[in-house]
Image (cartoon, rainbow, N blue to C red; front, top):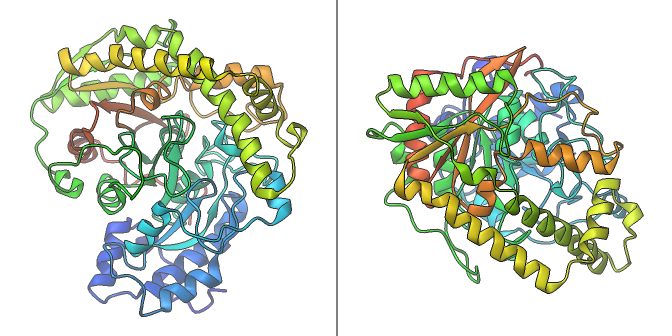
Length: 487
């Protein structure tokens, strides 16, 4: 496929350049878009057999687009990327959403989502679709439809989910950036597990159209996984903003997010917590990651102190989220049945999702509205921290290191999986309900695998996170680390 790739484009220097640097090469005429895409295709073909991150190669189409003079002259012209195989669909390409029924039906989407169109306008070239858990409902990426994706740092472990295919590919150097979305932690959890930067933007910072105004109620957030803060910021500049018909949008930034990289964050009030929501310690490696980040932030001049963040201990919002997820699973079953033109039996889903769908089918409209009111009431109590006490909250991204593959696999008892999943999203899911921006940074490693820490800012304040994340990236650099499996 990519025999013509120049030898100097196969070396590690190009492989580990971030998307911004690759785009700069194109802009200076030192590399063509076709050469960038050929090199990415070559890396995927050589390495992904060990990872299983790319489930649908789009190589021929990508090479043709990269060679086309009409390729948009956006800020990332010619840069190769992957799309997570759920929600953000591209015209003429398969979409499976981790479902065996869509895989077997050979389902193809006929148009770009608004987000895919914005990626294209920015100049990105889609090289393939990345593996995802079924319906994006799991925090590991081991769908029965396509098999498990392996963590490039330790192939016996999970890369996280549901954006695990995207995370594994970026961490291994196959592409510099990949699309991801986050309903309860699905950007931040894979970022933590694979040593990446993972920003969940403010709710409605990016459009879910034209297919959705909201998705899974108010909890879905779209963005990317990257290896650098500047990529995370610049991609958000390219894709943010309201699209026609969106029910609401996030407040606009004061200036481009890229301009916040390197900007002085000032002296911030930063609270940190390592106790699990509901009580009990996190894994020592996850606590050490937060403690180390707290020390680094204090050394940078910030006002850092423990905080109770007591609203995190309230069990009500997680119960509300369970109602939302159950009703969502039931609706996804109904929605895809309508689109396929036949009824999908719950038995065609993985067992945990079948259980979710069965429970969700019994949710009444009154129960749904009650769950939304509970979530909104609780969100106000948590968000008050940013009004009265702090500018940023520092937390573990995950309470435990990346688990071994199989521990959370869909073949396990669904009741056990539900309990395990709820425990592992305890630090991430709250901010899907509040809609606040939150970022996972790869500031720690233990036992050979990354351990991320999470920074949360007030609603609409991605600028604060970008400034602070860039400051930490300089103080505690992570760009030189390479996983066990890499290009």
